[in-house]
Length: 236
Image (cartoon, rainbow, N blue to C red; front, side):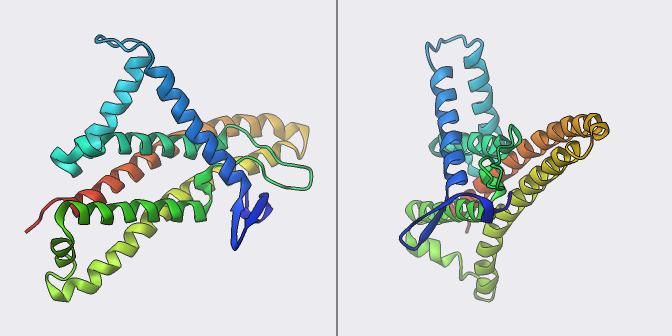
């Protein structure tokens, strides 16, 4: 579970966690595959897989529209993909546990890694700033940070807390869920009479973790849209 026992590779001064890289690419591939499969042979009267896709899309648009207003049409696909990515990335580590005999972890949720969550959250925050400048112009955008003047330090601090709240919230929930699941697996190996208890408890915990992971995907996407809405909407 810990990053130190995951396989890594160094490219220059940067160290890449191969488990996180592979599982992230797998998550992206699953999203692409789902959308590709669900959009084949679409009809005006949706049925089956098209219904599922449209329901998920409408669901994401529904809870982000209040933050973005009319501009939701420009960002709906982004937040739809972000929600799918978070939902799958949060849950993929619960589907299996693959570990070598020397303790190298080969399967985990990307979002159970703090570095991954910080980079993802930084990317989201950076996007809000870029879009804010593009939509409002740099002069009007920067004015929001210094109006009123005494609030400038708090406005700057808010950007840091927004980033940390996005990252730490999802990391804490997903990491804790996988740690608990791993402990239950270890318990089942202690003695044969523990196996039924560990197995039943693990089923309940996995179902609960899937629910929490989907809630975290919802919260992450909702807050991301709220931060963007605060940057691109004119507030005099």
